[in-house]
Length: 143
Image (cartoon, rainbow, N blue to C red):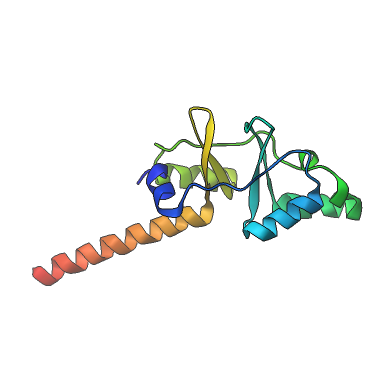
């Protein structure tokens, strides 16, 4: 299965925020979209970072409540690992596990076209395994 297949099933909507948004605004957006990370894009729509709940928690410990007024650009990860729609889900799973990445933007032709979470990858793998199990049970029942 490819990332494009996964996106077709889950959808390609991506919640984004600008780098100048306050961390407080980021928290509102995370809650509103019920997600664990948001892609940071500049005014041209170019991907410039990714920021997660984990980023907020870690920086809050360091900086305290004043962090809430800081811009997202101060806490985001700016060296974003991305994948393409033709990449295999199994390959993505390995990359996410090795690099301890929970959310990965999907980019095609320099444009953001989706985002995949580790939960999406696990769900896809479970569906694959269930399908294989059904096929094997059907094969054995016919035997």
